[in-house]
Image (cartoon, rainbow, N blue to C red; front, side, top):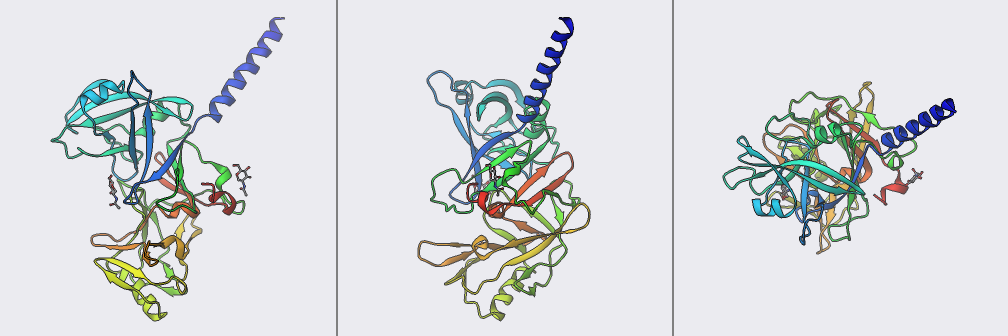
Length: 345
Ligand SMILES: *[C@@H]1O[C@H](CO)[C@@H](O)[C@H](O)[C@H]1NC(C)=O
Ligand SMILES: *[C@@H]1O[C@H](CO)[C@@H](O)[C@H](O)[C@H]1NC(C)=O
């Protein structure tokens, strides 16, 4: 009888453990702001008569972990004051948020008007260990809500800015393998070694169709807050030269490039370098680096930036690639999405 009980107990324990590992990720729907930045909405556990929610940008570049609100609002939404944060110039709070069917506690700072964070609403998912700010990946890991300190992004490929929500999703803790193309693996990319942000080396083979661009970038980064891809002021002109050489019409207007048609545009390709030194080819088709405007014209989703040598991928890359950011390994993970499932997310 005793033995039977023990077997039953270890069976139960095994079941609980399996359940724990399965649930160690959080999935959050993503939407677009008017300016093209991605954001997610968190609902506080509703408190009193007030429905409390906040729109937050996942910050993977700098560590921003702030919600701009008054002390009154924080209190009404059930947040508990943890004391003054002198570095940020604001009040630290902890609050319970609803993510899926789970109640998830998160720490944030509410900056006062003197703080240069005032007006921001962002949670930190970056690789920084900023002592003055909570990092959501560290905290969720420590509280055993996630199995690994990593976050993945996926966007619906058929979206437009006016489309009904959501535009995509963020998987915190573990990858959603069902999104990945059967012929592709989730690949760990080499780190370029920047201290403060996720970066990965490029094989310096950025091409428009067959044309190799000049002043080819040697590292890639990712921007959650913009749909635009960014090139240096040295590389960008060579993209326009490639258009010229192919007889592709365009006009420029304050930094923006407009095209009457995208018929003659070619895929833009480059290869990132994986952990085992093999190339991972990223292919952006014309739909992923242009957007059609209401007047029928197309806008090029490439910008040039001074003081920047990197190729910065805008968030449209998450339409065809599933991309993750792992804090402990300081590495970017990438996989080609399955066509079937990329239209879902
Ligand atoms: C698409 O996702 C579903 C689960 O959502 C999965 O069962 C299916 O295998 C996926 N299809 C492909 C082609 O990966
Ligand atoms: C969009 O707005 C957010 C603030 O709401 C800002 O952080 C982000 O940089 C903006 N993106 C662009 C492309 O201007």
